[in-house]
Amino acid sequence: MKPQQSQVSVVVIGYNDAAHVADAVRSALAQGPAVHEVLAVDDCSTDGSGALLDGLAADEPRLRVIRRTANSGGCGTPRNDGIDAATTPYLMFLDSDDVLPPGAVDALLSAADGQHTEVAAGLCVRRELPSGRETPWERDLYARPALVPHPARRARLVHDTLCVNKLYRTDFLREHGIRFPEGRFRYEDFVFGARVLAAGPRIALVPDTVYVWHVRRDADRLSISLDRADIGNWRARTEANRAAHEILLGAGEKGLARAVHAKFLDHELRMYTRELELRAPEYRRAWWDLTRAYLATFDAADLTVNPTAPGRLVARVVLASPVPRDLPRLTELAARPARLLPPYARAGDATPVWSDDLPRITLDHFLVRPAHLLPAAVDAELRPRARGTRLRLRLHELYGRLAEAGPASMDVEFVHRDDGRVGLRRQALLRPDRYGDLWSAEAPVDLSALGAGTWDLRLRLRFRDGSARDVTAHAVAGRGLLRRRAVPDARHGVLLVQPYRTHSGALALRTAPGWRGMTEVARRRLRRLLH
Image 1 (tube, helix red, strand yellow):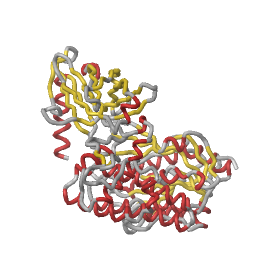
Image 2 (cartoon, rainbow, N blue to C red; image 1 turned 30 degrees about the vertical axis):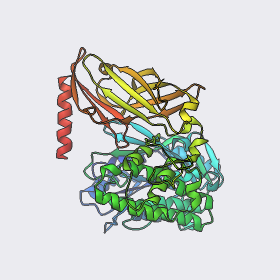
Image 3 (cartoon, helix red, strand yellow; image 1 turned 120 degrees about the vertical axis):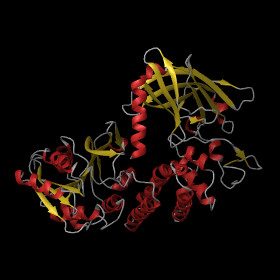
Image 4 (cartoon, rainbow, N blue to C red; image 1 turned 180 degrees about the vertical axis):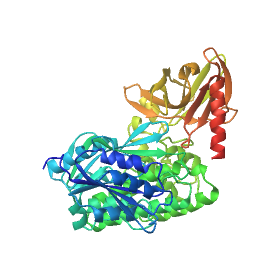
């Protein structure tokens, strides 16, 4: 069959999203003749979404509207309605606030049809709105075309928990009874994806961008993945991971089940740990208890394979303490890349350990890992001054390993958070102190050259042997270092500058040139407060 033939149903689900659902539907219809039908499942909206879809369907014979009579409370039930209603050999899913880029269906259909696979998957990009900045999701998995004869041959597949960047054979889903959890079940993709992998499909991977995931952090109602402030979100996330693990284990896919646990440690656990210091004490205690209970179900091998990997080390600390502790160090350890802040304790036999209070958590693997893979800690201070701003960096020794490698220099970049451009690039030589446990460097920072925006500090630590490690810097607080300042500027008259600490403890910088820029900063701050 030719991919251009009408073989695909696109299931668009939505609830009270009249502002965006038409764009989603149009993006599906614009895929061309390969799309036989677009099934718009309205989950009992009350904002006029249903009437809007009916109006679109009146002019578009390929659009079929399915109106639910009761709200399901989640995304799984309306997607299941779409699976039941599809009349084509293939189907895919689209959320009402996202879009399919041009050519997405053709790219997936060509791969699935041409290689006779049950599933075809492509690259999804997260598009931050309103900035438009795009971040690829699981870029390495989709770096090149590939045919995976069985999911066990590519364990990394469990990291791509999205259902929307994939094309499925309809009869494959129906024959294996693969459906989403019904009702109010968060992270339903995790369970659906595990059921797909457990059925052992052949999977075609394509490097094409096939889905645009819109991330609206200023929306009145945050998406499930962004609304992490309530402990129920973490409970739902652990439950979905637990279900995915059990599904794969029950299907005899032990390797994929282990990969689910590895993903949880490296991704979810680190992401939520980075935000712990932002939460109330009640949340922290509940999070700690939930996490300990879930981690207690892991096999010892899940934590002992590469035990100094950041996620595994965070897990060992959580399991070792019945109450929340060491949150500042855990926050920095959960950063990407990881930073292990001092103190660097040793047991009585000189074995590196997490702390004097938790000597059971040994760090002896740090003694054999290459220096460029260690979680090096760098402190950073930025002091905006009218007569010149300087960035001061301090690299901490780590159990003698960095001294062995010989830190030589630090490449310094300030990268614009929205568009990724480099606004400033410097190299700073590292000089050891007389005690041998610190290296220091300074670099001038031309604030005027940066212009307006939010800038992330990125560093590359270079060693004598030519090896290097990308690092970020711990933002040193105190003594007014993170205070907003207005400094005279020859180009703009005045420059509003604020060094600040990110969720993961790293140093970043906001700049607003000119009086107009200062007014805009004040306006945005007031809008956030009112929102």
